Image 1 (cartoon, chains in turn red, yellow):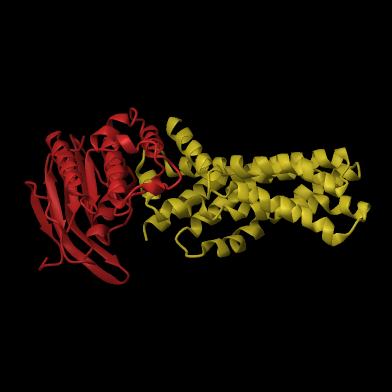
Image 2 (image 1 turned 135 degrees about the vertical axis):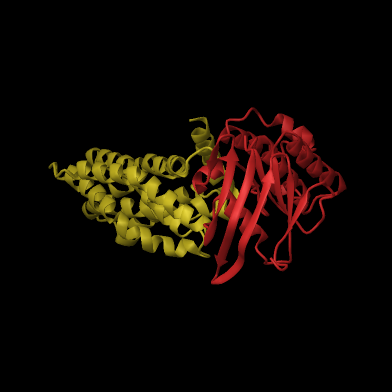
Length: 204
Length: 221
């Protein structure tokens, strides 16, 4: 379980452009950090950097786990639950199959409980191609919860969701934080939840 | 192991379902192999001599046909991010994908080759050698092809560049594979099958590491 996330002096260069520099923040266990800022300011890139996909130009990302600290990008990936802006839904596989695959990939128990939690039970046997954008988002959220990772990195978690879906998403975030997890959410819409906000691109 | 099998079964499922391309590869293989005797004419001796080469080249092209989507489909819809972050190492994931591709194309191509060899008046010994060479050699096609697929996964129309990268690397498989068929026809032993086995083994061993490195490179851009 992660105790805290520490970011020090982080700088990222993309396409010969400095997206951000000297970025520093830390998030304690059980906290939610919203990342805000205009389009193209580097919110998604920051999430990908923390997940270990991108390498920073300078600085460190550290996951503090009890006595030890994890800095290696590859190792960090093992703590990350990822909700990208794409939903990773396969058109040819049913909702149940996709959740079951993800569960087995993570050595988790079956995905049936997650189906019900996110209101997908009646869609379980429907192939992914017939899902609406909001339903695909719910599937992605169900998968995130199923993974059981301590640090959730969410890119626009509320995108395409209806009001019930938004409630489900914020409930999942609240429950995750209450259980000692950390949530980083890049978002334009206010989540309406208690937590710090990191504003990128403004006099940073 | 569960995670490995989960990915293998998922990829196999996606390959055989609509739009997966496994059936397409088989149909392509069958049509090309059927077309060549129509072009060459009814010279039974000649057909038996070229059978190994034609079937091997067609098998390689057919396997490449559905190879470009091996990583690209997962890259485009975001699944590759999830697979990269899963407990399954990327090398193992690449190996699972190679295995699934082989089970969906290489293996059925081999089985089909027995039937198609009849069109070429290939005697039983040649037909057996062909099937043996295909079953030994097609894993290398899937494996080396996967490296090309991983390198081109973020390239639009990468399917067109993929053969340019992969075909030269697969030349040894075609040479040894068709060589084994000719050796069987002439009732000599030229070691083609052993060389093919060595090539295939090396390819399957090294390819997952190369493919995983290429995927990492692409995810970081």
